[in-house]
Length: 81
Image 1 (cartoon, rainbow, N blue to C red):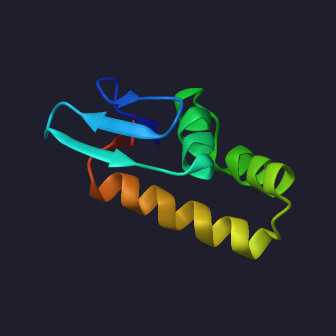
Image 2: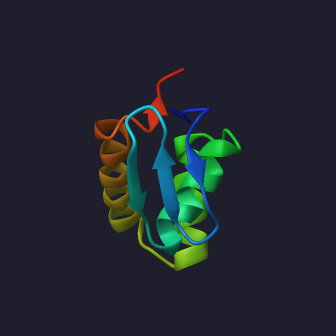
Image 3: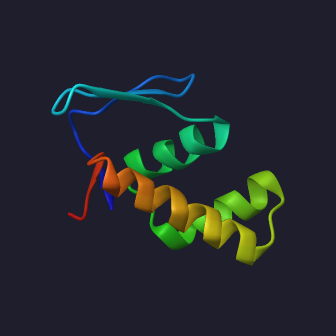
């Protein structure tokens, strides 16, 4: 999964989709995940990074990551390329 090329993401969590005109705001963890996606990290690597960075257990990290990735897809912010 990749973040669409035209999506603008600020360091403080503001996201703008010029395709739809929608804007969103995410927390620190959301920015962390988006940055990893932009770096083309695998979901497994992102999951491990979440557990390490935020001291999460595997179940919580996996659920949070999957929920966030689903939200990104629903709002057309990512592609499956």
